[in-house]
Amino acid sequence: METSILIVDDEANMRQLVDIYLSKEGFHVYQAASGREALELMERKPICVAIIDIMMPGMDGWTLCRSIKDSWETGILMLSARTDVKDRIKGLNLGADDYLVKPFDPEELIARVRAITRRSSQAREDVPSSLILPEMKIFYETREVFVQNNTVDLTPTEYMILLLLAEHPKRIYTRENIVEQADRYEEWHDYRKVDTHIKNVRKKLQAAGLSYNPIKTVWGVGYAFQQLKEQNQ
Image (cartoon, rainbow, N blue to C red; front, side, top):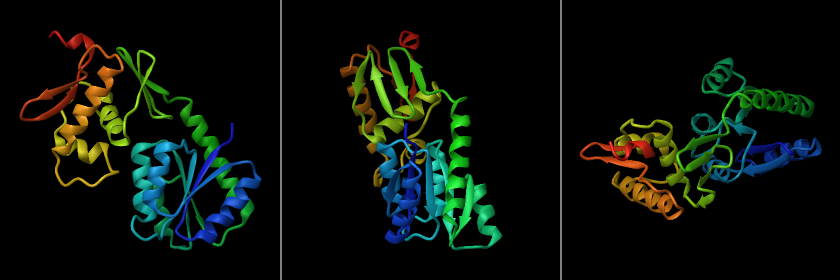
């Protein structure tokens, strides 16, 4: 299977140059011109390593690195013309696996990417690939949800809300908690939009065959995940 690499840089020439080097080595390469574009692509494609430029307009590389590490097990190589050791330390503290300064030697770039992919592969061996619940299964890498072998078509926001609640059963989340921890892909002008997302998740899961309501409303507080055995308690 090809290893997928994502190059995130606002300079098209740099993206294309790195793409050429990596493609020749057999990597499957994706490109993104901004942090927002990178996050949207990662919602759809499994990425092993993200190569991120630091100085980008809008969402900079630091913010993108933190966002990726909050949601994925993706390896990260920071790529920058900044040589200050404080920048390297900052990147590593945010979760980056490595830091390479421009201009770089193509062979060194490839060696560093291979090293990250090896470490990422070893780490994933100890990480469960799915979350198994009564009548429901959530797959982490593909972000797919199945109810009794039926695929549940959730939006990225709906998926992240479901996963947040399902991974922490019985824990009560306020609307504000859910927005802060489960979603960063849309603008929120009213936290009550969470209610609409919760309603849609319930509807889609039960339409797929789920026999119980997995998300409990805690009146005046927020929401909590509950499993089948808790329904009659």
